[in-house]
Amino acid sequence: MNELVRDIAVPKNWDRRGLPGWCYHSDALLELEKEHVFRSHWQIACHVSDVPEPGSYITLDMVGERVLVLRDKAGKVRAFNNVCRHRGSRLVTAEAGHCRGALVCPFHGWVYNLDGTLRGPSRPDSFPPLDKDEFSLAGIETEVWLGFVFIRLKPGPQPSVAELMKPFEAELSHYRTRDMIPTTGFWGHESPVNWKSVRDVDNEGYHVAMAHPSLQDLYGSSYYDEPFVGGICRSFATYNPHAGRRWSVRQYRAVAPEATHIPPELRKAWIYYGLFPNNVIAVTPESLQFYQEFPITRGKTQLRGAIYRYHDEGRAQRLARYLAARIDRDTMAEDVQLTVWSNEAMTSRAFAGFYLSDLEYGVRTHHDHLRAVLPVMTLDEAPEEGRMAEVNARMSNRI
Image 1 (tube, rainbow, N blue to C red):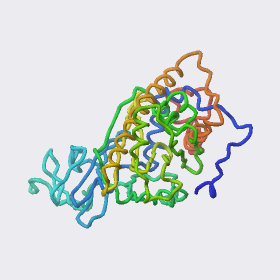
Image 2: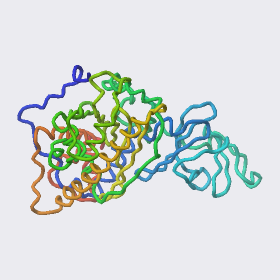
Image 3: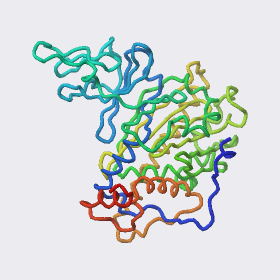
Image 4: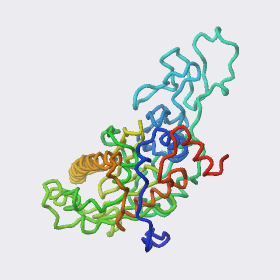
């Protein structure tokens, strides 16, 4: 277990303050976050099973960038900016699909090979000779780890995903994650809050007993969080075999089969693995999922995720997965309301900042990771919006 190699103890006399309220309501800070947090750190794009064969693709939009992930003719998963080199049109417009051997721009018909190189423009006689490598699609750094496809829009401070997630690799490998397949595709939801309010709620389980009756019924007595250490965190719980006050929990406990494909200590476990700044991979005995959030504006956030299953799933596994999804659906709705209440409070003159419990140490450590990237967030008072980048650069010794 990763406890053997990671110091997850809560220190004594730690600073229980979180980020100041201004950090959740600054347009200028959001622009710095987009550049130095989201574009410079690994993001989950999809699972390899979402692009199962040559020509399969998925697309996603994040922090002003358009991303295309596809499998080329040699079977390699690649990522590109979803931007035609001619006039910048979206090269692919659907969220997911399949193309026959080439990508054709819907604007003027430029054609690209599946490795991103330019096959040729339409009406080539109207152009001077074009270097097909020079006009190839702009590539995006890609890494596949345990079946998940990660992308990074620009070089950043994180090492490879494999190195980052090494403490969790052995445990997660028991779930045969590489071999899982999609269920219903990607889901998405817009929430009227700052993205950090979403992450703050997800980074602690102190609120479970009060705010999540289904989760409390299922596993509340055993749930615990590990803080962010080295860019990763973990939350773990085993469900109570006597749980059942809530209908979904009672039915889930009744139908969930013995998960003999994983070690005994994991057969009733729900585990959440976090990767800074905003990615979560979650496993139950019958399913795998990821979810994340991206800022749209300082007060609007896009939530995104997908659920995967075993390819040889039996009826009992399918029913358990359905019931687990019901529990998750209720939990997400409850969390959305919590984030709204927390986020709106920060504009009040009565808001005096956070005062965190030891059970919320994960929130503090996530904030510490943000401060390390953007030291301007250590300031109790907000700099002028027009000077935000300058102040942060000076504090980072960038100028």
